[in-house]
Image (tube, rainbow, N blue to C red; front, side, top):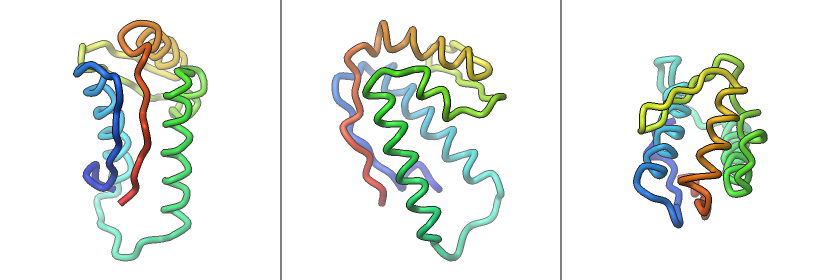
Length: 116
């Protein structure tokens, strides 16, 4: 699924935090497209699952719940921020996001995701 396929509105974010979110979305899109072949048919069950995941990650982000957000990560996940901060594994991602939420993104929220 291409990054261009979903749109979200962001409120009260500085540019660096917005870039972090865009990177997270891009990484997710890259992983989902890792098979290298295009889908000819849209599977409604998969679409519903993606929508649910998008809602859940948005909800946890808006609560600034780093622990809940990190549960969506694979054990070997790596998150690199636009500032070059690297977090490897679920516990580091959780700790790093908690710091981001406590500092530069303390008022950041996602308004909604629109699935196109």
